[in-house]
Length: 224
Image (cartoon, rainbow, N blue to C red; front, side, top):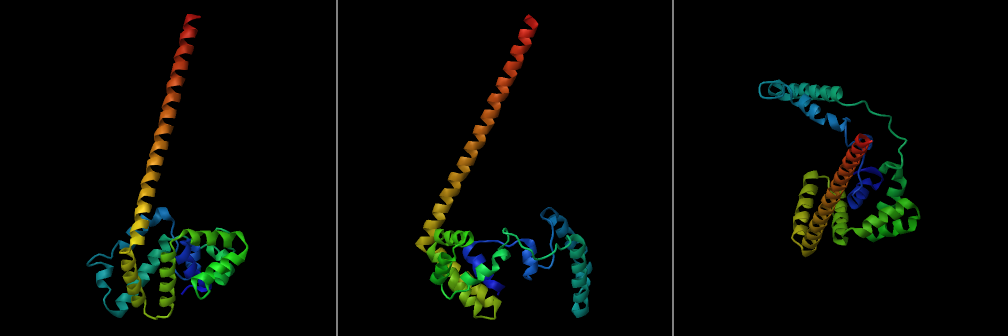
């Protein structure tokens, strides 16, 4: 439902939106610093346990009062909204015209062809992401998006997505991809641990050499 075919772009490429972008698109109503999320959760939960504000919020008027209190607490706990617009190259909305021109096409091959003909670094980067992805996953995702566009029932779209994901998870392609991803993660973790040990050993050797040089200098001074 997002404008400029952004939904397709995000789903097919794995790109992400920033907080201000989510607010500008109507996906969020408030912004909060990441480190303040625990305090925000506490503020929202305070007084809404059984017998508190939540327990008294029965019926239409009570629900309206509850929603007003929640909104007030969100506004108190969240940061002021920055000026919207003026997106930079790090934002997906900066490329909204290019996204719409390429990802609004009627089929996945047409999307790929539009990116090939785009000619900019952004088009090339998006094309490389699609080329490196699983063709089956891309086709399923595109088909799901098209089906979701044609329904007015969110629950039906979510159910269809869950069913297709469960079916895809049972395929040999999924098992092969998941196995490769697991092996890649294991190898990456091993490389990180090896590098960490190497750096630790290098620092230890340097510290030993420094202490030896200091002792030698002290001994030389004493002998003099």
